[in-house]
Figure 1 (cartoon, one colour):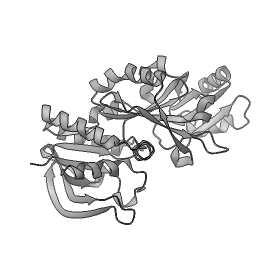
Figure 2 (cartoon, rainbow, N blue to C red; figure 1 turned 45 degrees about the horizontal axis):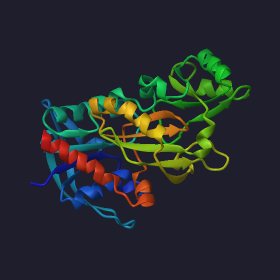
Figure 3 (cartoon, one colour; figure 1 turned 120 degrees about the horizontal axis):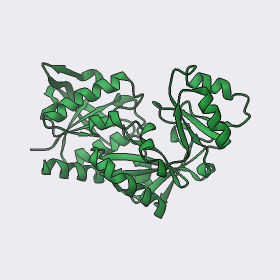
Length: 317
């Protein structure tokens, strides 16, 4: 029997074909003759304690004019699937959390969920670096404007970002004495009602914000450095950054080795850490991206490494 793979994602019709990592994984799975079942959040439900979904068979192809085709629809008990990829983009809101509750029920009935639902809730992509303070730049998480101002005074130059965003949205670079500081902090904290993260600004960002992939704690040997666009400081492809491939440094590998045991213990099979200079700034667990860009530069297949790992997990369960 072929492996049955379910994927929970944003509408596949609206993805960025050339860049979408989920599509890359589905193409690889299809090449292995796995059965692919497509779901969006609205397709999921729980009935009498059983996690279920309305699913669609899907075929995918590496064609910019037509990259998917839906087949038959099925009612499925999610626990009957071999593996479920949770690939819904943030925002990490209550609907996202409710979805993890459903997937946790599926996990309890036998499905391998990547990444583990409880750990998706535990490991906020910004906040979770707080468990590894020796690997990160000076960081403050607060909603108190006075604390944030004091942190800026200490560090002279900081980056402030929301805890629930992605793609560089609503990220601000503040310097001591900037006349916009108060209004930025008021807006981001909603007048001290919402937590934000502040980190010391790292000048090494000019050399890129490196995305490093770890598969069950093992790093892919290359990183994708995202070089900020002229006049910007954000190393995000969504904000116009330029991708550049780099081999992992000794420091990069050490950072990975320090977090790997925790990632494995928490069932975070596919993660992408962000590294600027010597420091880790984020641990991406919800739907890490950029594998297609790295594949193109080095003629590798990150998706194959991910699926190899999933196959081993399934066969050993």
